[in-house]
Image (tube, rainbow, N blue to C red; front, side):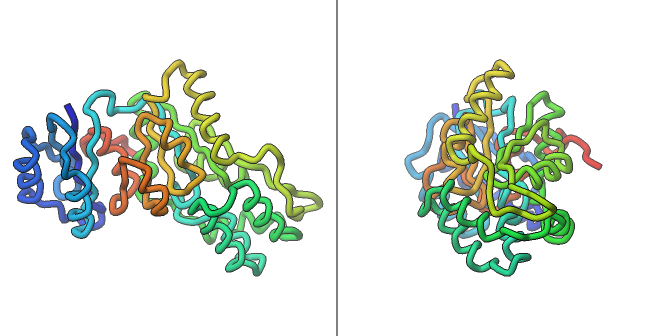
Length: 293
């Protein structure tokens, strides 16, 4: 059996019963179940419909995300999440570059790297070189003034952990940021790149080896082995080309507000919902969400 899930942005709860019923009837589905009235609902279907992506496109125009996935093993035992433009709304390196007066130049390189047009490792070194001489204290200022968290992130991490899952943050960014983000959101561990700092200033270098696409896959393999689970037990989420390896290897790889080149390679795409959508994809009802302070 398969499950079809419909999700909208919680800020605009416009999902209506007639839309759900029409799709359920067209696909020969079972009884629909509200996961959160007006926001998320699901129903079982016997097979993946031939019209899945046509319907997906039609619903996108209405602000509705649609996912079809196997019913078995939907609730995952591990969350593997990207940080920049996923758990937070910004790209940290772009924010640092803006403070250094080279924001537009670095942001353009970031965009090309996330679209898969540039090798991630080379692009990272080029961008970090632009930060040479920036005071170390700029990092704390960026964290305080520029970084915002993607809605639903704390619900996602807290709920999965409350149900026994492990949460790991893996980023092509920097440990100076992942440590703060992981603590705030409640991740069990974090991995990222190490910025070179000397005499209170950024050196314009990043330590080897660089954590990029392959390193994220390695993190998935290492952590699952340590936990005694398999890749099928992992839900991974990301938005950029350097996330494609882990998104493809995980049992559920979710492209969240992702670059087109990334979304095109993922069966699970969330373009309208927030991070709580990853809980609805696993069949969690809103009443099952863990309380967060």
